[in-house]
Image (tube, rainbow, N blue to C red; front, side, top):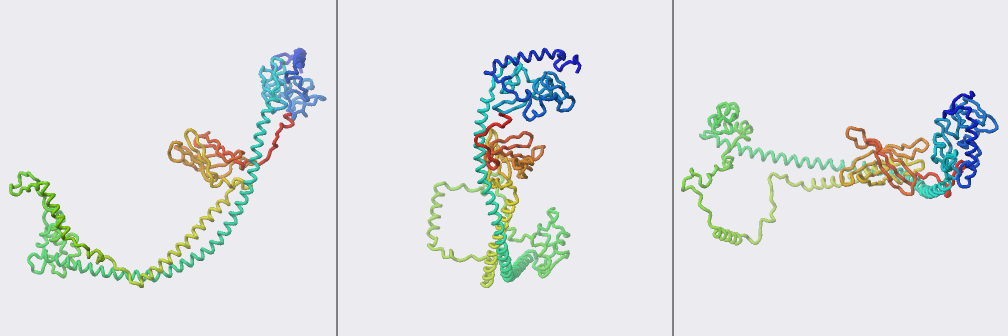
Length: 547
C-alpha cells in the first residue's frame, strides 16, 4: 500500500507511527483509572467492536481477510484507524470506515450495536463505555446496574408469562373438552332430528287428513250462506228497483219514458244542469221506454248506483239557515232568544226526573241476543267437531315443526363453532360468545372475538361496525398472534372499515388499546392467557453473549 495514500479521516498514511503512539498513551491513562471506569482495563478476548459471533473471522495468528474478500492485510492493521477493506470490516472498533457498526459487549446487560461514527465522539453510547476509549471522556460502566433493573423486569414478566401459561393449560383442556362436547351434542342432535322429522311428517299427514273434511264442511256451509246472501240481495234489489220504477213512472202508466228520466239530474252526465234525451236514452238502455220487468233486469242494475230516490233526497242536508241579524230575514222569522240560564237548568232537572220515573228497574232486553241478518250463522255441530279436530292436528304439527326448527338452529350453531379455528389447541375457544370493551376520551370500543369489532361515541350515538371476523392474520410462524376483521361499515368516500387485533400474553382477557393508524384501518391490542404458549425461567439471566 502506498505510503502517500490518504486515510479516510484525511491523515496521510506516513502518520501511522504517530497514531500508534497516541493510542498507547490513551490506553495507559485508561489503565490507571480502570478501578473506577470499565474501559480498556476490561480484558478483550477479541478485537474491539467484534461480537462473539464474528470472532472466528478475526484470528490474530494470521493475516486478516476482509469479509467481502476484497483484500488481505496484516492483522496488526485491524483497528488501526485506517480503512483498508472496501466493506470496512478491518475497522470494527474505530470510526475510520463509514457505514460500519460498532459492537457494545455491555457485560452484565444487553449487547447492542451502534454506528461506528459514534465511536470516540465524546458521548457514552455503550453502557460499558468501550465506545469512548480515546480518553477524551471517561464513561462509567453502568451495565450491571442496568442489568439488575432489567433482570427484575424480566423476572416480573416471567411470572406473568408462567402464570398465563398455567392458565393457558386450563384453557386448552377446557377448549378441547368443549369441542368434544359440541361434537357429541351435534351427533345426538342429528339423531334426534331424525326422530322429530318422522313425528313432523306424521303430524303433517294427520293435519292434512283432518283439514280435508273440515274444508269440505266449511266450504259447504259458506257456499250455502253465499246463496242465501245472494237471494236476499236479489230480493232487496228487486224491491229497490220496484220503488225506483214507481218513482220514475210519473204518469203511472206502467212505463218509464225518456221524458220521465230527464227529470232526474243524477243522469246529467255533462253536469250542465239539464238531462238531454241522449243522456236519458243512454241510461235507459238505448230505448225510449221500458216496462217494469225490463227495468228490473236491464235498466236498474246499470243505474242503481246513480239513482237518487225520495229516500236519498230526504237524507240531503237542509238548506242553509240565514244567520241571526241577516237583513234578508223577515222579522217574524228571526230566531227567538234562548231562555234564561235558571229556566234552562230547571227544565233539564225536570226532564231528568221524568226520565228516571219512566226508566224500568230491569232491562228486559239486556240479555236478548242481537241478530244480524247479514252475519253468517254459526256452524252446525258436525262442522264444529271437524274444525276442532283440525285445530288440534294443526297445533300438534306446529309443535313438531318447532322442534325441528329449533334442532336445525342448534345444529347450524354447533357446525359453525366446530368449523371455527379456535387455535392450534382450541385455546381461544373460551373467548367465543364474549365481548370486551375499552373506553377512551371520545369512544367506546368493543371486541367480540370471532364475531365483530365496533365503536360508538362515548356520550351517545349509534354503533359503527369496524369489521366482522374473517380469519387469523399472524405470520406463518405465529399464526394465532393476530386476528383480522373485515367488511365493516363503509367509510365516507372510502373503503370498508377493517380491524387487526394483535394478541399479547397476559393473565386476563383484556382489550388494552385501540387506534386508527390509517384511515378506516383500526388496530386493537388484546391480552389473553391463551397467548402464553411457553414457560420461561422464573429467574431469567442474560445470555452467554450478554455475560
